[in-house]
Amino acid sequence: MGGSNLEVFKFGMYIMFPIAVMYYFGTNLDNRFSVKNFWPSAEETHRIPYEKEEIRAELERLQRRRLETRSRRMGEDNNK
Image (cartoon, rainbow, N blue to C red):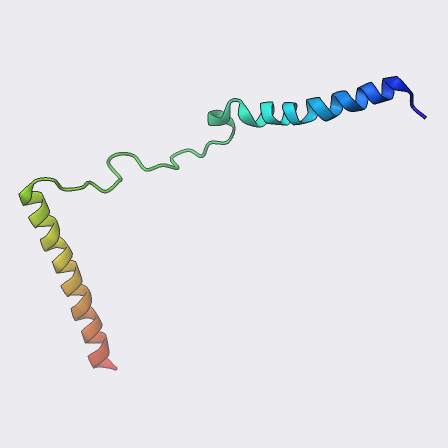
């Protein structure tokens, strides 16, 4: 059929195609497949409180939010 040149070409393709695909998708990933502002900045993330006053303030904030949600839910139940 094709001879030895065809076999050499096919063998080269079998070897080079996966290498070329890995090279294409493996280089310059930051510019090629990046989404701008995907990760939140340090100001947008949650900050863990370490000091006693910060922990106390955070607990009070969470308790206020829970009580507001509870009172809103109870108000909706009474209106039905």
